[in-house]
Image 1: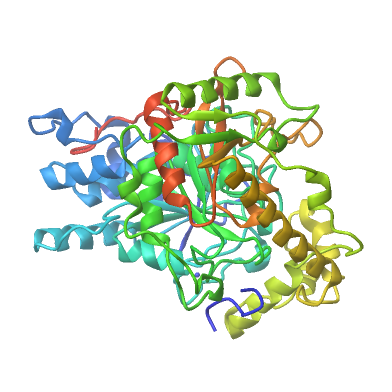
Image 2: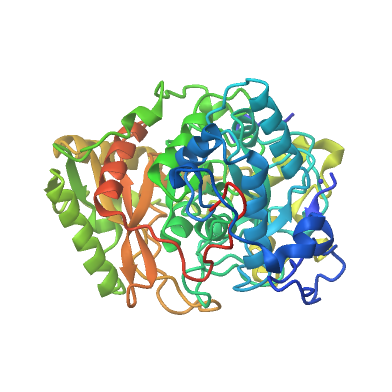
Length: 562
């Protein structure tokens, strides 16, 4: 069975290798010398002439070209329609950027595997267009897909060497939907192994940490840090991540991206390696609200392979909410309970304060503070004990894959030794869990708490007549790589995962000398994504905080790509 159980609700993959350097010299060897060099995979013209690439002429009207860095879906589609750009040229431009920046230059270490058929897929899309076929909503959108989402015939590992070489027979539902809309899976992105940690992105499948392109000594947060770094650095046009407690929103905030965590049950998780099916969500990460919503509009809706989506209530077109002046007349509460603590960083608070004033200046009414009475009492789980569903969720998932899965149990993973040392204790703890989550007293008690918490949040929002609540996505700037001691500042674990209500993070500015990105979360009512998109778009258009990281500048242009 492909889908998620009622309780829970690789191909000729090109394992990523060091790229040729921009000066044409061979890349260094290193611990992954057994992997074929990207240099042998690059087209002959690029291998011979990479150092001599020239700015080729673009037909009259510079607006008809497009820059691969910071490109948007709308700009790409306009350039494809105008004629100077082909899908192949766009995909090749992203492959060039991957070659220059993921293992060379800043060496972001964001991507695990490249799709060997990306250029061939681009050619087929170009041929279809020449034959008069209409563009899909995501026509020729090269995506970085988190490596815990199944991709047909392309290695899927969840960051673990225990799954190395596993090539699923089907796409995860979200992957299938974006492909059907014309998107191209360009690469699989690194993640915190098994999606365990929100704090950093490191795994056994890819040696070393994924770096934040805004400061190469800083983390991307976790666990969708590979997708975040790739999209922020324009190694892909957009990406897909997963979020159990933080893992779309935190990495997006750390890298000046827009990230969407949907209402539980509005988007499918079928084909996603689970961490906790009671809270797991998958969704888009992009450089603009419009691009994130374009992906979301394709992703949202019921899926028979994920029973939790049976009651999904989607809007006819989420893009219709992206209208000018979206903040006028909105009532927005400041959720201080989400971020105020002794270790909250003063610069983050100052940036957030300016963000709130920007909301007010655009016509929103600000309710400050807005919060819950007796938060600690609401979230207390009396006498229930621990709730750790990972073992049962994962083993049910692996059993549904039949003989194709390389391991069947958490104990198999431990016995193999194929894991990063940082996850050993968590794997060992999971292996001791004797009861499935539907029977474990701690999990049953937690579900009762979640029901009370949902009710309390809705009552508070109703009493204050709020359209949304806002707070800093993280209370502290991105930490230095390897630092697990200073305050992390993760504000994402409580409100959205516990309620199952939607949350969207958008760039709100920068700290530490205007260098490190910070994000603001819009949190809303169940199935209130349209309202959140309207508000987030209004804020984004008024402030325009997103800027490209200096570590990955534009490359010399090819025809059709500036």
